[in-house]
Image (tube, rainbow, N blue to C red; front, side, top):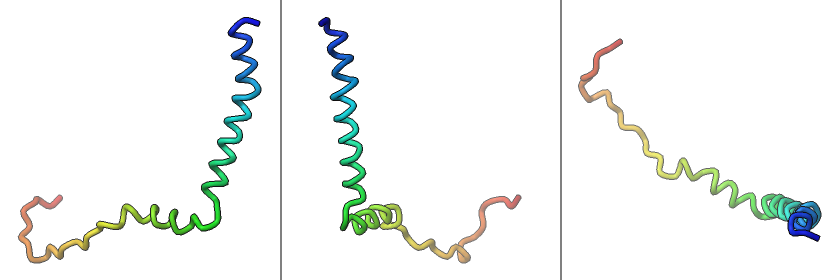
Length: 66
């Protein structure tokens, strides 16, 4: 058996099995019980350092109105 045929047979069987198991493991890990708190915490990252805008009614208008 030459190298190409061996690698093709390996990719057709064992690599497909390994990638399928990896995919299923990733799905199970993402939806595991208790991960809701982690996902909610990560979803709030963009809003953690949000500052309240300063009321700029006291500042003079320097731009031209369109």
